[in-house]
Image 1 (cartoon, rainbow, N blue to C red):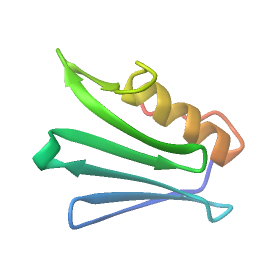
Image 2 (cartoon, rainbow, N blue to C red):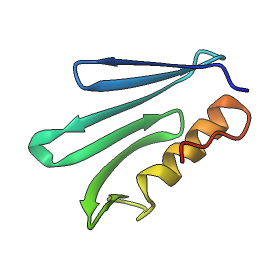
Image 3 (cartoon, helix red, strand yellow):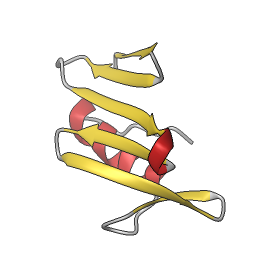
Image 4 (tube, helix red, strand yellow):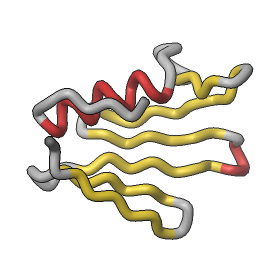
Length: 80
C-alpha cells in the first residue's frame, strides 16, 4: 500500500506521497473551475454535466488524478 498523506488548508487539498512529491487540488470559484497541479503539469477543469472535464485534453478529473497519483506513488492508485 502507498503511504499517502493529505491536508486541507483554505480550500486547497495537498496530497503528499512517500517520495515527497505532491499533488495540489484547489477550487477557482470566480472561474467556476477546479485546478490540479501535478509533477506532469497543471490542469484546469470545467463542470460539464456531472463531470469535471480538462479544458485542454478533454479527460476527466478522476482519470487525470489517478494517472498522476499512480505515476507519483510508483504503484497503482485508485480514488473510485
